[in-house]
Length: 173
Image 1 (cartoon, rainbow, N blue to C red):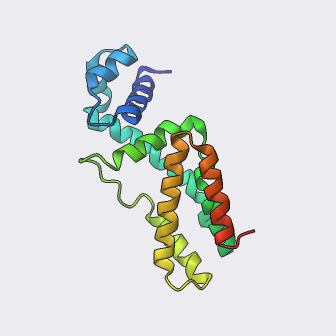
Image 2: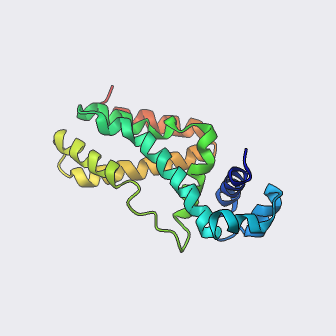
Image 3: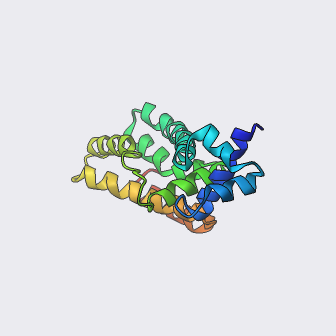
């Protein structure tokens, strides 16, 4: 692993645990056992380091959502969407934890991350003849957000119950 990769991994871990604003570059450097100047040499700033990590997050989001966008059958789209939180690999949990932490940071704009999924779900609920497809799509995205949050906190049993409930609610079995 290069020192640059080590810095990204260390910053990811610290940002996911403590938040971006609460993590100093000196703490990142100390934990990575490198000089603080190396952060600035590779990334320009702490925000530049965060941008590198966000680029990785966006790749992971696209990889997770991509198979759903290829589906045509609306029931299959909905079923696969409801499985999304459970498709997150444990090795990627820090990326997702950071994504959740960043939603509450003052200087981070997390808008549009789920717009494509929201659009696909709106089309799906329209095809399934729901009266308010936009609201139904927003509801599912919010529920999945809560399920993913519980999963990342280690509440697997609770989230499995929610998944089964939603699959039954939408008549997908």
